[in-house]
Image (tube, rainbow, N blue to C red; front, side, top):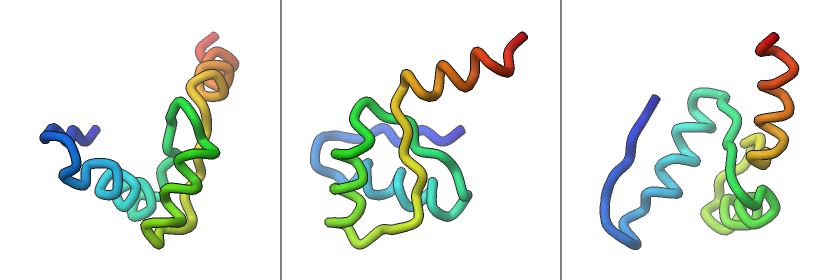
Length: 64
């Protein structure tokens, strides 16, 4: 797990997106459409974005 703890407007989201891309990870967030738009604005492509609800539904399927 990575923790990026800094102040506002320091590039935390873009760095987290780059880490997700580099590690072929899924980016779990509140609003996947908004994050896709933000990633595109940053010039970052190839990240899978899912909502918290999708994540927990998937986790619940495999936790039993």
